[in-house]
Length: 62
Image 1: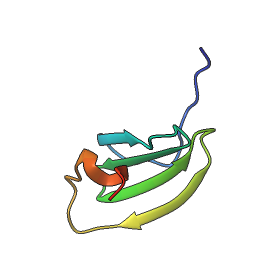
Image 2: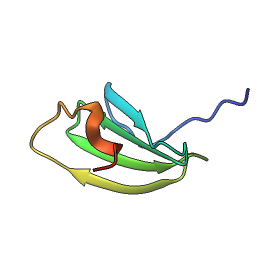
Image 3: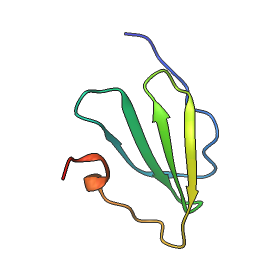
Image 4: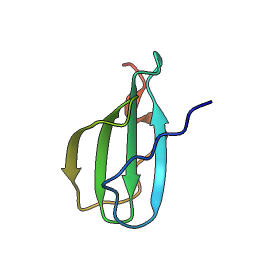
């Protein structure tokens, strides 16, 4: 198994979730950001929030 370091998170990670196909990862951290990543570790988007406790429902289909 290969290890990938996801760079760009400041502070503690509060939650991580994976898309059903395993291609996307979403993380939330104590710095009040939500980050969307590709599986290979590429940061796609950072969303600044005022709330820092995001749940695992982030990537579940509706």
